[in-house]
Image 1 (cartoon, rainbow, N blue to C red):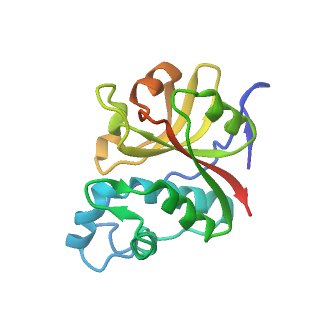
Image 2: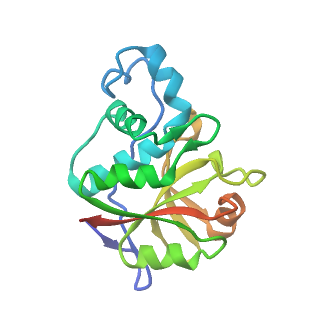
Length: 190
């Protein structure tokens, strides 16, 4: 499950990538009854795509996005104008037997590094497409680190911004990381 890139950093590079992009070809497989319903959510389920990746990696269950959406809405996990409540996302993944902890770390990236060194996954709040002019508002899954970069699964509703195993320098990451430094640390099965 874990792969050492070098002596310094451990990674989970074998984590499967799942997109948040819902199309006419995949909306039914993701559990939606209509394309219109899927289309109404595709821009707002980055956090659910991250949960789907985490659950698949740690439990070998591939959960449709609509099931995660229904579970999240039942928990009041989504607030219009705000987005997904990170603690509710952590609660959702814990229902699948996976440990999760929300933290606001400011600009202390060493806490992400520490989690990765302990073979944990990290969901982080960044700007969509890693736009340095905006901070936060989009969730990605950090699956590893090398000496100067994070290795990230970036789900997106935009076809040209769906990036699996995307390498982003720590400097570029810092520029698009949420002001509060919001992360969810995933530490495996409970």
